[in-house]
Image (cartoon, one colour):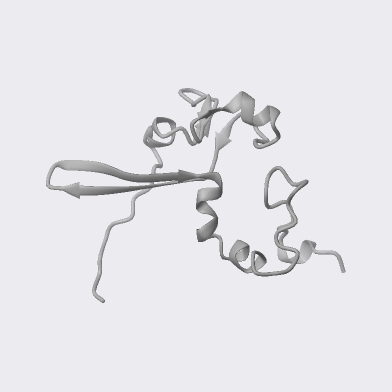
Length: 114
């Protein structure tokens, strides 16, 4: 279709802290997905006190003006994980009720049981 658009990385910027997807550390956020990180961890929805977490943001630039059009976190990213789309079609689904991290079943190719 001839579409072109630039992709950008947050590497070397404060973007991850500004949008609360990096917890702890120098300048790290104490919230994720608009909830306190401590409460998420206590509820079993976070496994770590520090580090980068999944998130997606979309922006539109018109001239010198940048608009923050959309952000999503956690389950809002499921549509981009094709494995989840297939599992959601199966009779037993994802079977992640006792899996607070959501994807503990994923392993490297050589690490599945024989």
